[in-house]
Every structure is written in structure tokens, then in C-alpha cells.
Image (cartoon, rainbow, N blue to C red):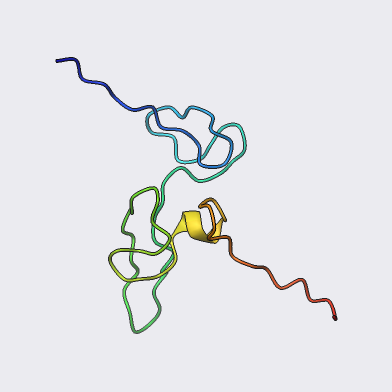
Length: 85
């Protein structure tokens, strides 16, 4: 049985990524969905790499890079535009 390796595609522009790429060469989007928890003086940094569809870290519950960057359908983070309504 042949080993079929799935091509890694950019979550933003769908460009094929090469092994070892951390960011898309076409649009600059991150290709690794890691945890955004940077830690502080009381807690350790979480550097867990999560699966591609994870909006929140399975290790600590913090938002993932793909969630923060709006790369997951339906999970875009709303930015405060600072305007009056």
C-alpha cells in the first residue's frame, strides 16, 4: 500500500507549503497552529502545537494562532476600530 502524504496547504491562500515552512511564502500566513499563551511571571508559556482546526489550545485553553489571525471559518477575532457609533 502506497504511503499518501497529504500536502500541507496555507489556511489563508491554499498555496502548497514545503516541509519546514513556518509561514506561507505567498501571503505570509502562519502554517503552524500553536498556542498564543505567552505566559507571565506566574504562569509558564504554553507552546503546544494544535491541530489545524483548533480555535483554542487543547493544553491550556488560550486562543490559537489560527484563531487570532482569523484563519478559521467563523472564528475571526473582531478588532475595535475605535470609532463612535
